[in-house]
Image (cartoon, rainbow, N blue to C red; front, side, top):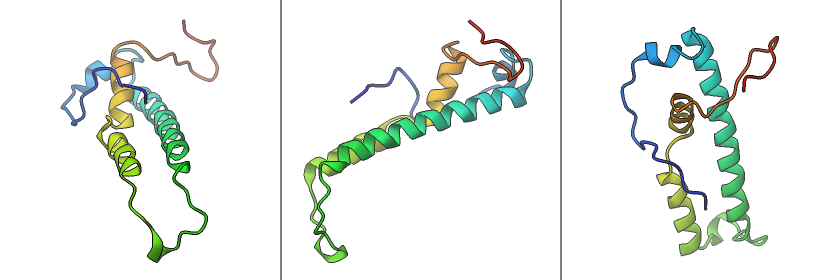
Length: 108
């Protein structure tokens, strides 16, 4: 499982003027952050579903669901990971995101 960089797992207070600095506009920064957070969330969901697929049983019904310790541990691992929005903010603050406006060429 992929380990995350040093990203806080709790929400922290941030000064929005520092989030607006790279783009010059807080709204553009928020759009960039939300799109990156969505990308991260989709990737994490795919990874979780892939890992849990091994435990899928075709004959399970609501009354016959068995607890599997490995499945529970995998789910707990993903619950302990930093939330996608916190990862996106961390990447943005560290200059790890490449972004551009639709009418511009990609930034390096």
